[in-house]
Length: 274
Length: 337
Image (cartoon, rainbow over all chains, first blue to last red; front, top):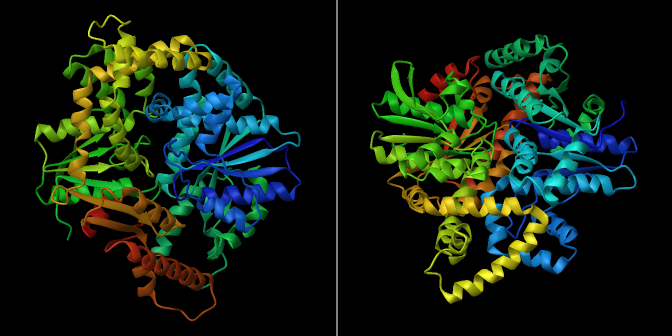
């Protein structure tokens, strides 16, 4: 296995299997004795008290996969406490209408605080904590990375500016972070993945790689019986997209119903996503 | 058949085929002689792929001719909307503030509010019978509509006036004693924030709030559109989900989110359905992968259907389409409406 990164951002169009793959990757890393942890990025507003448990988090619980639950409220509080050296003042500031309107009007600010906390957790850890970040959909990961730069421009100077500078330096360190872009084998999904890769390259130096997920070719290779016509069409589309892209690794479709079983069955393929 | 309305709002997580389905709805309505505008708020701009539009067309209404029907389409460009707004309201500061400029990048954060402004503009132009709205993935748009109330109270709250006071460096003669007392508290808060954000930011941010405040009427007017989204005679809501993966958890989450907007014309669209295709095929009786896939697919879809039906009355099925080009997809889907 190649030397793992400290942060894996798993992204791609909705429905490509980000949560399942993130969980399986976390479990795989844990099996290799790496202190890996799953986290789901939930952009919940500061005003919402209750945080619904995501599907990923509940599967993580069922499968005993370590997971890091971070709320924006906590992240913001931690950060302000550090800067102002007072938990009380920090709490008071977060509760002001001014701060809340700052977060509401600048959604990217929330992403920045969240990513800052993720990076801080990695840096603070003594035993090589590796975080697998299950990010909701393509746009969000761009917002998150773009917001680091945007806020540098917005702030211009001061503590946040210095900290975003440190964040960028850390993220751009060789092999610190890796972005896994997942795509199902359809035209729309694959072109979105390619576009995302290009856009990501514009906003950061983090290495990114596209993977096909849920390919079905392996299911019917040895089938002697005739495929139904709609399945034939589906397979033709898959073949057309994947045959030109032999360098892209294919994570196969798992013919199981339960998410837990699927996470387990995907483990043998995860080495390629490290 | 789903009756055409002034506003047709498509929501759902990414990857469920929301843009394609919204486009097929626009095509269907256009084929039935409605004047249609299709707006995509989705910053990933799938519409340009579906309709083979150019990135350069973002922010401008583009005429689409598809399958002998005509409709207009618009890819949101927050920056262009902001510029238009500043010109219309004659508030040049809106388009020149450094912070607002960064925020009006496609992923900058003002995408939703500016979309509503753009939408309001086209609604008031009276040129369209139906405006089909393709919203960003997830709960963003609805979250945003909820935050409309917050924006509304933001404009009502006197603290914005205090920023107005700071922006004008206290040269406002009508300032009351009470506000002076409040402003000293705000000053303290700003001093704390300056330690973290730097002084330059605080000044620009106050300035950006002031610019937004100066365009108050424009924002409040657009925000009032949300009342039309609550009116079943003016709007249809389509919650798009697909049978792939575990999207039903998100649909339930969605129900909780949109409860203030939902009325009787809220449809769940089950996209990429294979139920009819697999059922029509019948069991082969063999122990093959095809048979296993058939069973897993049918089982999954039955579970989702049962679950959706517990919470929503109106369920529309859209068969999975196996066409290579997105345009062909749209044409096939339009027939399902």
